[in-house]
Image (cartoon, rainbow, N blue to C red; front, side, top):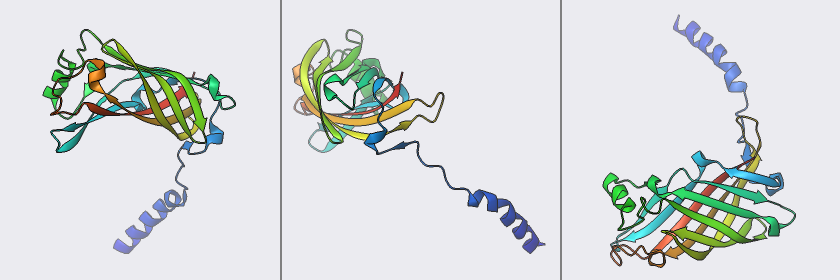
Length: 203
């Protein structure tokens, strides 16, 4: 009886085992990047920040639910542009009390300055990397920054109309005191490392 049951289960599982697992819809293949206008995939885009805490640890938080747009022209990078906005109220760390403090006037003052934003002014592409010059605005202070961006993947989105989709990761460092956020320095570092993990779906 036991042998017969094992045989039945094996036969039932055989068609499933024979199936080839589906591949990821996006691949690290720059030739799949499609020119056009894109919007940020809010649910799969992150704006991360990392500071040094007391000289002991690096501590990372994020702004969730960012929005924005991207224009891509693989034939002429001079036409490329990107904009990312992130709601300060959506700041998130592992400590609820810290989230509340970060929204206060000591730090980002979310009630008075509800949105942070990066807007590009020039994009220079070299292979699968790009230098993105632009302006970062926090607490109504705008400063020039340079993002080092790298291509992650492209292809057709697996859901909905299966439109072209593309993803990038970008990094830069700023001094938070340049934006009027000086609370806790030097116990918490002035230098802040920023990472933008961004996915874009074509309009």
